[in-house]
Image (cartoon, rainbow, N blue to C red; front, side):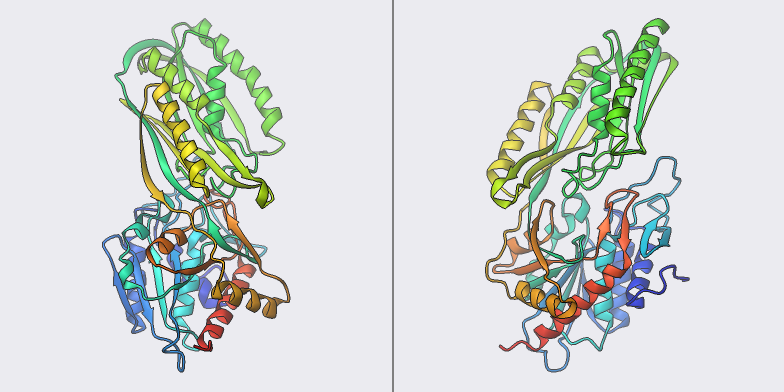
Length: 486
């Protein structure tokens, strides 16, 4: 294929990145990219194991003289978040990513780029492909479904792994190494209902152009949640309308950028009054939001609707109250850790279907008691407004290991290579390290990665120069571990 990323090193690493970017690999659609990795291993004479979840483990013996050194896991995920701008005809089931390169950054044409975590997967492929690299035995683990609750990692047969050291390549800031993370889950509200038929004039709102972002790392940046704003706008409407639809967001782990609703009024006069209220509110929202998110759009319209299928009044009211009153955003900070976030949640998706409503939240916390407090409040909110609730995809947090050979080796290597200190921190997002640590007793793990911006949104950008630094760093660490004294 003709590669677009040229002039950056290591060149072959970016070729691997473009190869996997050409393969549709949204969460739940990873078979093709998983098969690509299996073939990659076979072509190089490396043993690979592929499981029913399409996770792949590739084994590579240690380099000469390092065959008996403690093995190391290199780990990343091969799925990506599928997000695109309004109006895009990109089909994530069939189309590869259209990569754009400008001023040292790679982006995608109207979609997420998938550098989270395609960059990590490509880096692992590059290291496996390089027979000049000194390294201990490598167990390269490529997981699936990370973006939808660590689905692949939760099904991995951990008995296939001997290593108790792991380098996760799924962080987003070069120069920062992550050594702990928050745990999380999906929390759902659901409710069945029967629509009723009414005629009148539908007042519709469409919210778009918001920045969105990662529901963990970007939750404290003051970005507007489109679903919560839609609830606020609906709440400003005069009485007498019935909800015809309400939808927003696409992923629980992405701050919603878009939302829409329609409320049906029996007469044109009532609809026009409601529209006038929304126009006034639009001016208020513009003043609040445009200085921070200049792409924000709040659009309204009126249309005659004959025999429209709408929600009963009590169901529409409960929907509105649940959107308005459910907790969202930063919930708690740790004063002993420079006021870092330790607990948050994101109302990521609301869907009103033909006969059901579904909310999806992403609660996160590094403190179990605070996570349970969030869960308790969500349960009360669901029950107060006559929704059922359930929890899925729980994943554990990851605690910092006090004595870490990996952390020390990374710090020393970074300082020697770049004459700078490697910053060590915890992250308010989920990493698969927690599941690995839970299943591999005594695991010494660290997470690093190139600089990414705007992940989980069509603004995602990948700093190509930073990737070279991360590759040099991991190569140096592997070389030092291959010479480690037993």
